[in-house]
Image (cartoon, rainbow, N blue to C red; front, side, top):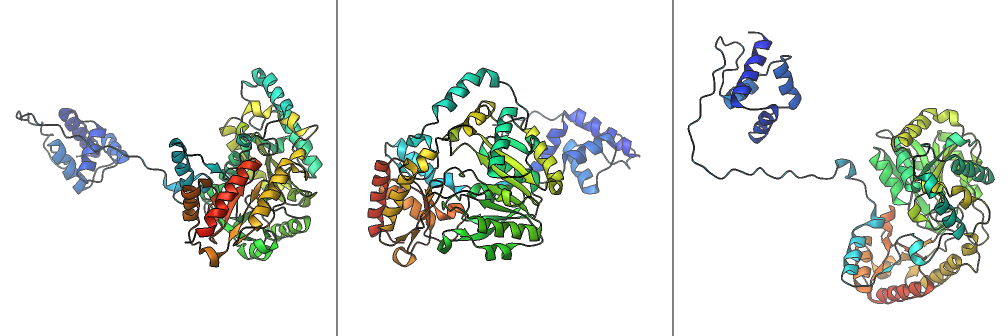
Length: 496
């Protein structure tokens, strides 16, 4: 017989038994028989016939002669004899696991220790939190003018915006880029996002092919490594040198470039070290990118939180001939981390990245647009008086708290630390001979459980040498004092 006759036999036998495709697939799975949905569909449509093993299985299950070489018609299924009632077997519950794409993705800034801290808080224990760079809980307020402008525009921002962002927001960002000296940025080269974090993921998905290598600093803001990995790439970490105030080790950066390298990431000012990269270092990085035809990705979210009279230089301003993407936003400078407003500016030689720009635009269209009410205050925030300057002058709160934390850490036996020049983080080191730290995460958990102080270990920032941790110096002076008192007492007896 032809294949169509087999399909007719199979269909008729299934009908006589009252079975559907899903039933056969379930029975096959229970008995360890390989049978796919597409295979079964092809059998029923007459496009193909099964192999002998599968034919025998189907014939046995349906209690019918399905052999297409047989001259007999399918044998009707006999009426089963009544069986005594017995408890119906309950199939095992289907379980759902996380995607394997997340197997090598980590983000330990909000890791297991934070879960433990939350559990302790539920038990009524007060936790001194030095772990998250979130200004609002520590009394940093959004400028009144910004709040008032958002409130007055809420009714006008109920709908979607252009996927790139509101015209007024992008215009203000373009003018800000001009002030920073970033070349060749037009309105269509700017995309707003729900914070820089959102845009890091968006750009990585648009840019990274499986196997691409992206140079990322170590220590880094861990979302960069996570998003490169999630996109199918490999984050290759170049070292930042503690002995050189945590500036990038340019020789190590050069040594890490391969034929698979596509881009260099810089985080300037740096999280977690607070380092600020001088012009001459940036020029060297540009030259490395130029020689190896690499994209420059620059995270500059802390560019307005610079202290000691230093000046932030945007690396894109030094690379008009290269393809650059600069990441920035208002979360830190305007103390509105919860409003989620950031942006990217594409600059330089855009002919080199036309395909990537198409990918970024596609990804932007797929998420429709970013938070429109937050976009509505970009123009107000970037224009006029910048209240953030009050925080970073020598008498400003951020600057004074940085100095206090730095001096306290320097006075602790066995602790060394580089004074940060920007942002609101500091990255101290514990003497390995004195404390014998071999497990950063255990140190973090022990400090939390003993002294109720929550920090983030160096490993959380892809820094492999044990004994480092990050402190956020946003809490008020009294809270910082209490937390540092607890840390100092802890270090008097703690050893691993």
